[in-house]
Image (cartoon, rainbow, N blue to C red):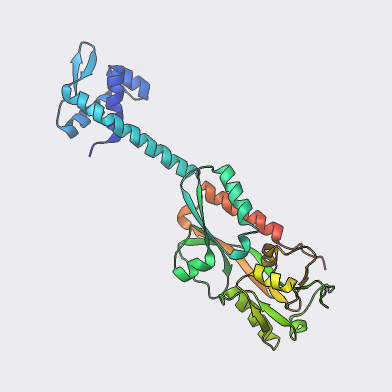
Amino acid sequence: MLDLHRLRIFRAVLAEGTVNGAAANLGYTSSAISQQLQTLQRETGVVLLERTGRRVAPTAAGELLAQKAEGLLAHAAEVEEYVAELKRGRTGTLTLAHIASVGLTWIPAIASALAEQFPHLSLHLRLWESLQTSGAKADVEIYVDYAGVRELPDYHSMTLLDDPYVAVVPAQHWAAEKDELALKDLREEAWVDNDMTQGICRQILLDACAAQGYSPAFRLETHDYASAVAFVQTGSGITVLPKLGFESARSQPGSVAMIPIANPTPTRTLAVRYKKILTGQPSVKHLLELLRLMAAESQPPSQDI
């Protein structure tokens, strides 16, 4: 296989017409250029150059090689530039898996910021819950961290946010004016389920209710947080969901009330993990920083005791 570096030197010598001229242009010594040319001729098995006075010119074989090498070197330069762009994170693709409740709250702003910083980056979005059932992997995953989540040894992980559960009730409900509620206060209420996938977020809530000695009486089963909140707006019942999930539901102002749950507060932990091989890639570093900012903005302020 011919060495691309030697082909570039060969082309430089032809362009300058002398070994000394090519050496000066490339920043090498004349002896180094001559040595590379001799090696190239041994590799090809043909004479590539001949002297014409103080200058050198290609032989017929050298002329043909130069013509063939032109396109090859141009393509190699494109590949090298592409690799450089990959290192700078300005091209290529990045697959980001995320839980549904950040799809409307975090992801649009993140996608916009990445597009501005890395205009040639193609961002592929996937629902994390779907990847869990398919067994597929993403470059970066925003996920719910819990005891049963499968560990991925080829990923780094980082906690983003502790997301507390809140109660969502109709605006005229007796609990609407409360500063906080306990789960036991909702024992006799008609509940609207918000996760028919039987996922971990639903299980966290069920476990918390079980610790209070009851199981929620679900009157309606919906597929997602937005649907559940829509039913609460009509007075069909109450629902309990993570605070970030409520923010993603986009209810009509004044139609429902959100009340914090205390003593105890069910909480889910959101985390991010990314492939170890992508450590240091600019687009991934920028994405992680954006996630830190989003999580900080979503985190409730600490209260002094």
